[in-house]
Length: 176
Figure 1 (cartoon, rainbow, N blue to C red):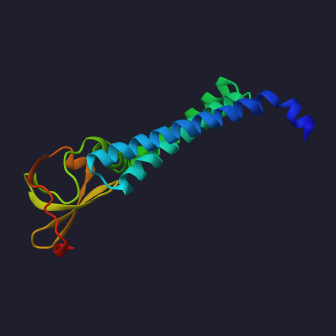
Figure 2 (tube, helix red, strand yellow):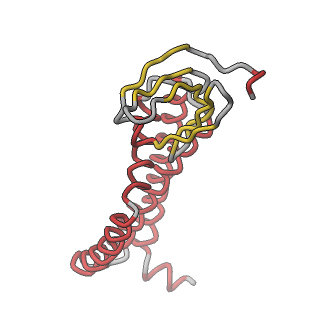
Figure 3 (spheres, rainbow, N blue to C red):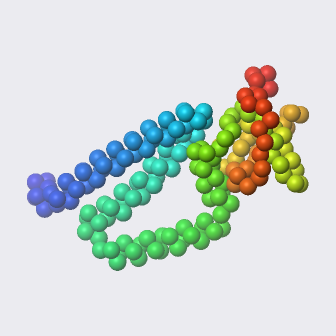
């Protein structure tokens, strides 16, 4: 064990420093996202979801940096990442709408002017909707129409359509 530590002493120290830095950055981001979520009136579940997205991103960056610490060449890493991104790119092209909805969900977390309980009207030419927002999820909004119908509306479309606020905090306990 001593010979292992002596041989890889600098790599172990750099890895420990990297781990401390990444955990600190993650903690700062998660705290900031929760504060932004609380200030904007979003649910804790949505803030946790955005925190998980940040954690995955930090984890991927950490793997990249750790590979350099362990001595991988830039050319080797470039080949691996280009292969991985080619596969991911093809997969994401096949499921672009899901990626679009997740990205819209992240954007809505930081800048969506409406919150759960608000009654909104979506000005869609083909199917206009007037409903109360019951939940805002990663892929879609859950809307409850006046007649009791439950409508799921994709996040990417809600950012593309004109939306009017009909009534703030229209959700009452009797409609649940």
